[in-house]
Length: 304
Length: 304
Image (tube, rainbow over all chains, first blue to last red; front, side, top):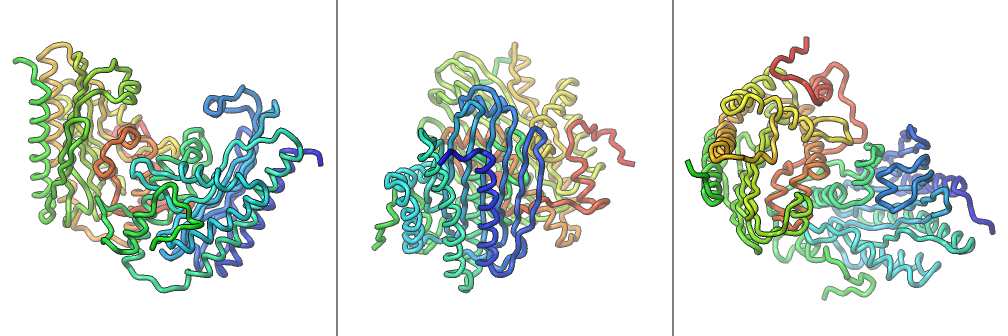
């Protein structure tokens, strides 16, 4: 099969946005996405879809973009690229649920190409439960591993560790959540391999609404207490800290004149900070705090 | 007069922390500061004073520190310094009031010295009203100008522009608030000049509780609406964005193993984000949004 062109990949990613939005609307049962289209002056643009008035999802978005043009100097420097024209397309998602018992989720799949043929794929899915539940974490990692294994059995262990390292708040010495998978600069040396990496990214896209619908169904209608809501607000504060201080994509977008509203659709609807908050020893909050660590093998983890 | 030693400056700044805390407690009328002392493994430490259960101030802190030791490589690189021992002391303040009608305020005075004699002072005061009121802005800038003018008539215009440039959210193309003054790397070529710059920083410290007490008294007891509280939450979101994305001190502290809780005492108690929020045309919120701009001369500004 001849290698897909960048325009074909962009079209597949656009379809994936549509597929995911439909799946999330079905999972939520009430909210709908509202599309906000934008144009990039230097070339390309995107459609950011914002979730509104959901039953389960309080705030979130599924953003698609395909941008191109002369490579901005800051990007060329950072990526150690020659100058010339670039093309980048991708789908990014962050969802913040109302309930503290439903996890925050993030997904991204992206493709980057330079006119000299340099190219790579990147992406991943990671989960940030307000309350860590080992069985839920095992389910999530199991589904990621199954999808990875369809393509390459080295993917899951490699990309799982990569997510642990990437989604890490150095200033708190804690992970953002229970991780997931993260990969970047995956490039192909043959047309077959190119197709396989593209297919892998599309498989992650298809997995996404299914996995998140599982978590929506499982916990969204359970009652919760105001203390749990307060803990959620503090965890959302940490989510803000990660995204604004450490997330390479966010920092880079804000620094290179990216589209602010689309980049910051990842912000929670509301967040709180308390000086030196310490969860009660023995509480589910303390359990969560103690498990925001790199290197936990959630597939086999047994806290007892 | 011989030049004050770094230990004497640290002692004066410690006294200033005490002076400011007393003034703010008196201004608030109910809350008290609680001290949290910490030690820096590599040398020095600090006392962070956190405001608790205030009537007017919802969350805030007055942090003092004096740290020293071998210059961390990241700091030496950033400041283009030779290696060797450094000494740094300062007082930092951020106060978030309950009422959307009372402004957020920030102050910092600091002194840095290397063992080879290189030294400088830095600091400033800036105001972030949730609602910009030109007369209040004029009062604030007038008080800053008066204090600056006691030392050097070039200070206010220079440091006012510096604050406009520094407290700027590039990704929003808006200022954090109405600015104030900001200065850095002020160093002396004579003992008299050294004393004068030190005195200037102490004069700012003394001005701080007086100016903020004025704003507390003026507006804290006025009634406000839930829409104003909602607008405050969005403005607090922008405050978070500035501090985590652009504030050099915050970024640097988090990146160099600083004391996270003391650095992030600047976070508001609570903040909100809404996708593409636009204030109602003609509203006080729209007026505020339209005045988050560099280069406004608040001393003479007349919106009519």
